[in-house]
Length: 330
Image 1 (spheres, rainbow, N blue to C red):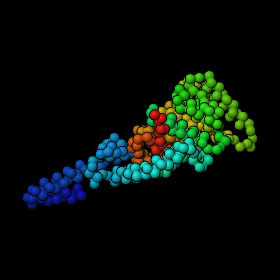
Image 2 (image 1 turned 60 degrees about the horizontal axis):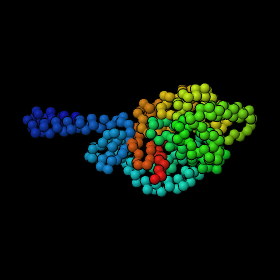
Image 3 (image 1 turned 180 degrees about the vertical axis):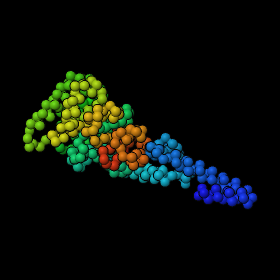
Image 4 (image 1 turned 30 degrees about the vertical axis):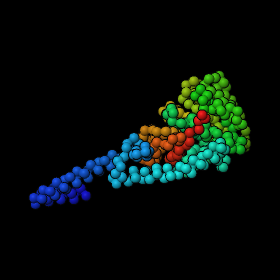
């Protein structure tokens, strides 16, 4: 189109039709401005939100003139509106899930959240056995961790849990009296935590000595793992050993952190399934292992009472979902 406008302006100038020159030049400038505006969306990371008047893509407000939105933006708006339409059905099902502690029908499958109106879950029994949960303070990673544990505990399985809470006991205290929870320790008692680490090392050795024995799943969950390493540096080799050798012995390790940079490379390579909670820069998504195609489809801000996250399995497509925040009692 641009060459045609330039050609029209040149022809008009040769024939003295100055009004056509002005019209063609103005159209060419407008065409260039719209093209540059559309190009500015390429590489823009984030998703769609709506403030009641305007649509936003990441932190950028969209013009109300939808005709000039790039195709990729229109697709994101359409996806966003489909999710909004599914909200009533999703909310009704969520109340049923809450009533049964987020129990899903498939054994060892823990409730993650929703993709539109469809509930999604995660299992560490099949596929990658260990999990890294990454998110900034306030993003909701401890909420998601507690929801996963609650969902697993609601099932009638023989799995056991060892919970290490280095967030002053805020995350796991409510699980202390639950069946199949063997221990809950915190950073308030380092000696007790050190004893638990020694017990886990002994359990690993005991299970290795048992030949041809079916080992029950044993979940070891550590909230704020970098803080745990700083307070108990001698525990790191034990955790690395369990992660490296524990899969066939039933061990499943779940660690949370604010950044992958705080996780030793010897561990990060083994934690090939990750949950990314909240908003990240593009470089952070890449370091988490998200595929580049998915990065271009990053969702925006979540609705009230929800948080957004992504399930990243190295070598597989990234799955985005929303998970509910707990209902606060008044």
